[in-house]
Amino acid sequence: MTQTTQKNPWYWVPSLYLTEGIPYVIIISVSVIMYKKLGVSNSDIGLYTSFLYLPWVIKPIWSPIVDLFGTKRKWFLSMQLILALAFLGAGLVTPSNHFFILTLAFFWMGAFASATNDIASDGMYLIALKPDKQSFFVGLRGTFYRVGFITGQGLIVIIAGSLETSLGDTTKAWSYTMIVVAGLMLILTAVNYFTTPIVEEKTAKEKEEASFAAVFKTYFTKKNISLSLGFVLLYRLGESQLVKMASPFFLDDRTDGGLGLSTSEVGFIYGTLGVVALLAGGILGGIAISRSGLGKWMMPMAFAINLPNILYIVLAYYQPENLFFSASVVVIEQFGYGFGFAAYMVFLIFLAEGVFKTSHYAITTGFMAMGMMLPGMLSGYMQEWLGYPGFFVWVVIATIPAFIMAASVKYPKEFGKKTEI
Image (tube, rainbow, N blue to C red; front, side, top):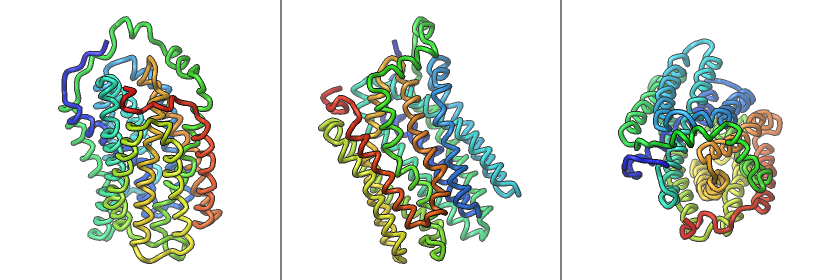
């Protein structure tokens, strides 16, 4: 049985998932902008920053350890402290001659800590809340996870851009920015320490009966597991490549096929209009599924997350100078992403149903990360080979498997509907 100290989820769910989102987006996405501004090539950016997905891919290997030993609260608080140290280290070594290797090393450390933090935080959500509360707070959880994304891609990038202007030194600007991120992580760790409940998760008997073998056997013998994992891997095949090259596209000079925007302009687009669109899409997506179930919305949401990619082809061909056009594309794409991602997340929750929810959710999100990592590793090479217009055409072609899998995957059509839970 699970016993929980009563703390209002309105206090701890937002901060816990904000702390999941921020380090992930800094390591996976903001690092792309940072390396671009520090002169790293697109091919190296695509390869090495995509390889940073690996800890999220292989986290199922150690997820049973988090599930079976200690408490989720101790795990995620420890990992959040390590994240603060990792970002501090990245900031301190950015001015060095070997900044690329050294910052990647600290991002690697942060990636492993962040992946483990995700396991423990998701586990806390699953064990500290009853099923009806999980359903009620899934929208809030997803919203603040995305707020973490926008905090990184918006606020943090704006800070970096402002420092670039005021200091006149890109290297120092990004060094200070990473130190600011370290401070932010330390604050969030303190907030989570005081707001999250203390949970007694399993009895001694339950821990004794559990094993690594049981965790993986019960997962990979689920009904239609191959089809389900195919969906998890392919639903964001186009998005996994777009997300790596969108920022370089905005930042590259117009003579190189980009739009020639400044760091602050990119941060502004994602951090203002982009955040409103993303949150609106995510909230509406959650409401839609809770009212009608996943079956009604799976295909419309697959279209919502993938079709806006076509607009990047238009941007690449015409290279409009007016910031309004670029911002409009980001708004539409972010709204579609937020709305379409709701179906994906609800399906991940469905796939994790069973005895070992924490470990099974970690395994599922590990496959999700693999679906982002492998295509992303090739994205920089594809862009340099095809140019930006050709690359975005390829991204749109790569969305086709998502529609096939969305139409084929099996699940209870009413899953996610509020009355079900």
